[in-house]
Amino acid sequence: MFKPLAAAGLALTLAVACKPPAPPSQPADLNTADRCYRDGNFVCAASNYYGYLQAYPGDTRVMAMEAFSLTRSGQHRKARYWYQKAEAAGIGTYDFDANYARTLEALGDLDGAIKYNRRALDLVPSLVDVRGDLASQLVRKGQSSEALKLLKSFDADLVSKEHPPYFSGQIRTIEDQVKGGS
Image 1 (cartoon, rainbow, N blue to C red):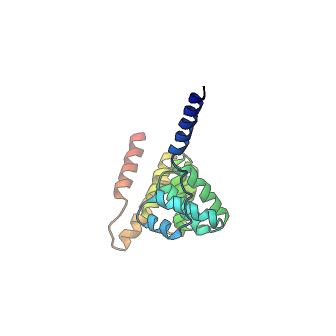
Image 2 (image 1 turned 30 degrees about the vertical axis):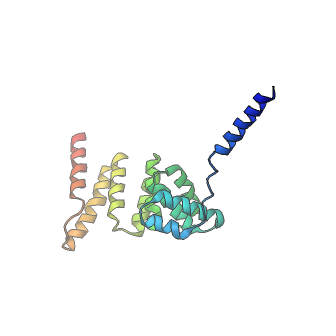
Image 3 (image 1 turned 90 degrees about the vertical axis):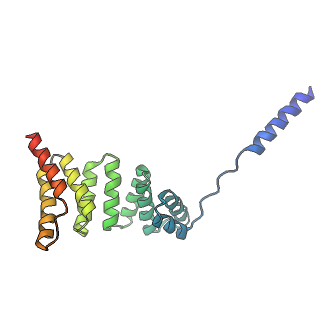
C-alpha cells in the first residue's frame, strides 16, 4: 500500500524537477537594445527596451524606441500602446509619426495612418517613402486626385532642380487606375 504512494511521490518530484526554469526577467539593458535595433534585430530590441522601461518608466525616448521596434517586428497592437503613451508624454518627431502611421495602417486604421503620414511630411517634406505610402492610402480612400497632386508636386520640384522625377511609376499607375475606373 505504501509503495504506490512512494512511486507517485517520486513521479511528482521528477515532474517538478524536470520543469524548465522560469525565463529570467529581461535586464534593463539600453546598450543592448540600441545595438539590436541598429542590427535590425527588432524582437531583441523590443525585449530590451521593454526591460529598460520596467526600471525607468518615464523615459520617453525609450517609449518611442519600444514602439518603433514593435512596429518593425510586426507587433502592431503592442506598438500602438507605446505610441499612445509616448505621444501623451510629448513625443512628436517625423520618424515617430511615420512609424505610427505604419502601425495604424497595419491595424486597419487608414484615416489614422493618413493623419500621421501627413504630420511626418509636414515636418520633413522630402520623405519619399512616407509620401508614397500616403499617396497609396489616399487612393484607397478614393482620393486619387489628391494623391496625384502630392506626387506630381514633389516630382515637379525635383525636375526644377534638375533632378529626375521620383514618382513617375506610381503616378502612371494611379492615372491608369483612374482611367480604368471611369
